[in-house]
Length: 120
Image 1 (cartoon, one colour):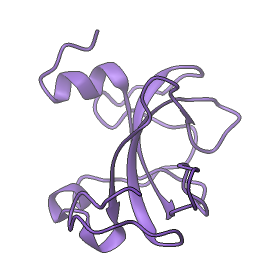
Image 2 (image 1 turned 135 degrees about the vertical axis):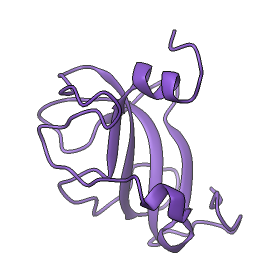
Image 3 (image 1 turned 120 degrees about the vertical axis):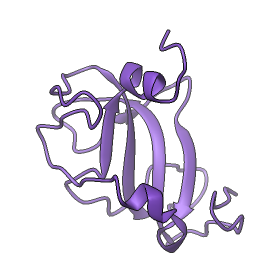
Image 4 (image 1 turned 180 degrees about the horizontal axis):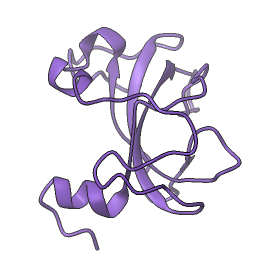
């Protein structure tokens, strides 16, 4: 069972949540695919996402642009992204009822640099 990064309570199936994840962007899919070596980073109940994060999230539909460098996200690029939806039942991780937009998407290298980490 995953826990909310904000309140530390369980994220129950059906709960509306924000999910921060790594993935690979596929132009034919609404949301990036999960990365096989790392996927979900953190999750929050919708009401528990810190206000400081809410202020920088900018919903966008395809074609997606990196929120850090503003360049277009190309097919098969590795990305970090936020999505919002309903928590599925285990063992599934991908949120349900996600809609057709993402609150945030960034190239994985841009994300790493923004966090002060080596992108390699």
